[in-house]
Length: 76
Image (tube, rainbow, N blue to C red; front, side, top):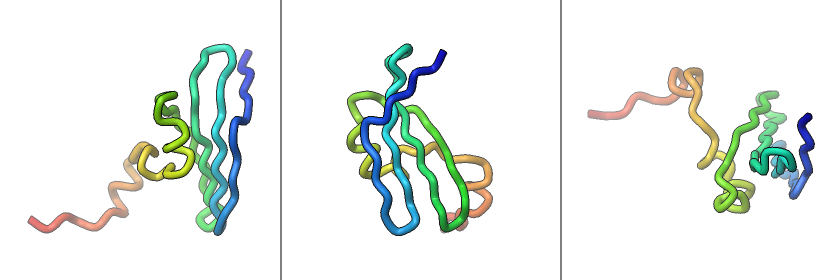
């Protein structure tokens, strides 16, 4: 049974960020919902970095294959 508790929540400029704690596993995660492109991702973060991840979620968000396809090519 998952018992998620909301530790912090903010909404600004179409971006909704929620810091969650799983009481059973003691894991911390970020839920990031972007209303502009209608995407939501949830990813685990180290508890020591939880507050920083809450304020800077894109730094901690994992890259996906779709992200890599859309990223501009690096100059060599």
